[in-house]
Length: 323
Image (cartoon, rainbow, N blue to C red; front, side, top):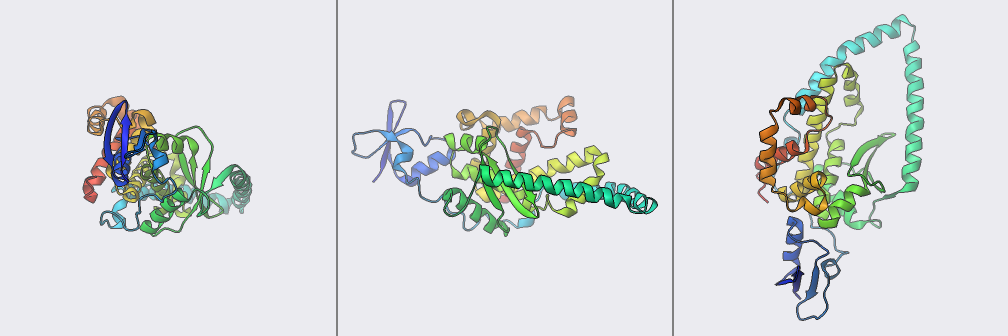
């Protein structure tokens, strides 16, 4: 049975459930808008008429044919190579120090590793008892998103947690070699307030991208010894974030939903669907050459949000993604 919508006193429809899902995905409709089954008398929130327990849109096969190697930002490998080269002097100095001090450095490293291990155990204990672990029986919609993304990326599934923290953020980490992704409720709530699981897929895909690209692997951590050359380290960090944005786009299968998720992080849930993405990208192009914009970029771990929007648009064109 089809559904009618009452938006600010204007009745439209009837629409099929698939049509309404598409309107929600595009940001045209909120899941809380008033709705009723065709012929019914009472108006209720739209989400109560849609099957809330249904799985999110299937992403069993990627919506576009993309070689997984294409997901990596084109300049990330170059930045990583420079990182390795810049770390060589540090490795030489560490080796000489170890030999000249008869291994004192190894003792220092051992002590540092011990404190680091204790920190991981401490954080792991907190996470296991203060966050919800996503599984087939716990937040199954989100669980399916994770499974679909991991299958499309040929990635071993990490542990996924959702934690209460009222900021728009998420992070990927490793705890004793176990891959972990943590989503903060601030980001999840903001996306789902006016958005949908497809937009949340972009955020999940972004964090899974750090594991897929090896950003947390020991080999890349060793390259961070070039931290004395901070601009190179930050350059690689920014290119790595762009790689993860591309992975999120691929997992989502929709440039529209990906833009909405990114705009949610930019202006919040209430205005994300109203942002003119083309004008926002043009705003970045107008100011990208400003001196202080460039200067601030040099000291940033992440690309500017409007720059990320521009890169999303370019990646979508590269992937042949139009919707």
